[in-house]
Length: 253
View 1 (cartoon, helix red, strand yellow):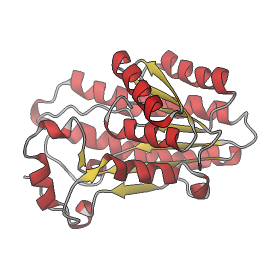
View 2: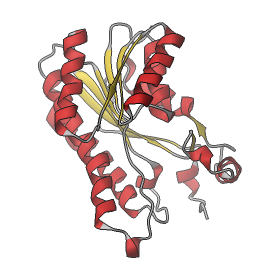
View 3: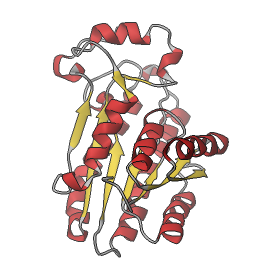
View 4: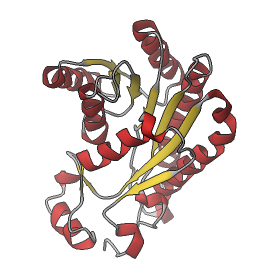
């Protein structure tokens, strides 16, 4: 069990990619704090994971962009398990909109959740990890839209590109404390949200060089590698998991 005795926080994990990451961490022996803004969903997700893995997954419902709540998650991990080894800032919000009419409210909400939540979770986690003899590991969730333009996602795409730059910049800040920080950038992925579009699979089967969009397990497998001891000498990097889409840039339209 690669993550036995490790303690992790994963935000935005009530379903989709975050849920699968939590499930795999718990299966591998980690104690996991599963966050989602929907408290009921978080509780249900943690219960489902515990039933499946017989592991330790604790739900914490709350807004992952709220500074006080961020600190509560870190404090809760330490009070319950004595330390914090892994933080995965997975929570994010996608608000589509035409650039020419995009509202300030939508813009600042995207930045608050995607950038603010990621930045201040990394800050709170790093301050805890500095105190620990073995440091820790931080992982951000970006997107292929931080690498390729996508219509109606200007604000979202810039927020994801900024997250990748944050990971690079933090190398100089946190490396002396044995903390490594990386980013994963998923492409088209089959989740509860994307499957609301009945044509999603058909369209992305054609657009993806590997012949299909990602499963959540594809993204979680890569994420677990980046937060494992096997990747401790990797830092400041972004791993794109998109079946090759960004390599050939086919249009999604």
